[in-house]
Figure 1 (cartoon, rainbow, N blue to C red):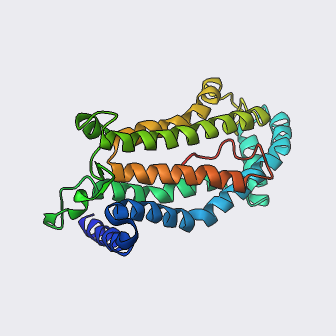
Figure 2: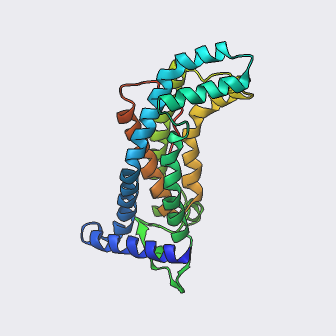
Figure 3: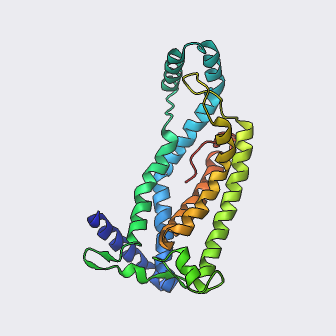
Amino acid sequence: MSVFLSGFASLVGHFADLLEPLFHGGATAVAIILFTACVRLAVHPLSRAAARGQKARTRLAPQIAELRKKHRKNPERLQKAIMDLHAKEKVSPLSGCLPSLLQLPAFFLMYHLFSSREIGGKANELLGHSLGAAPLGDRWKDALADGGILGGAGLVYVALFAVVLAVATFNYRRTKRQMAAMPMPAVGDDGQRMPGMGAMTKLMPLMSFATLLTVGVVPLAAALYVVTSTTWTAVERVFLYRDAPAAGALAPAT
């Protein structure tokens, strides 16, 4: 882990040095935002594949409904029939999870980088960098302790929370519309009733607001990663699902 962390610290440091003439004290924060954009560009082909898979699953919904009626008394046969249909149409049930999973290492590296006082036995110089008055290694509680909500660091978080709230509200409204157009099935692929599905349907649109909690508890650098990635996801979904308004309802929010 320390080897990866040292290499990642050098990468972020060099990136910030290149940006310093343009952004001065905010160069490291901008480097983090651009690094996040590079990660999202790298996984964009997988996001496109996930969108194609979701659209295909939506298109297959009527056929799956017929299979459920046909094999409602034989769950094993139903499950096999649905798997065969997915294989025939080259649809992977897990494709939608891959973009989120592949971003986790980058997020955890960012989190650990700005949570570590030392890297490779030396002081972590990146902790001295900041966005405005807010050090990149500090958390919201540190900003509240140093000047409160309207202090220099506090206002940085106010701006971040405003962006997250705007994106979460957009995602919430869009997900509500999508789920209304494509209700989640009450039974699973095995033909059995899925317990708690009603509550899950109600709670799913609210998951967008969980990002507010994440931004409030992680180091500011990791919060910048989360805010940038979440905003990217919202814009990306509008583009990828523009011709299928109900297709993106169940795609993971990352």
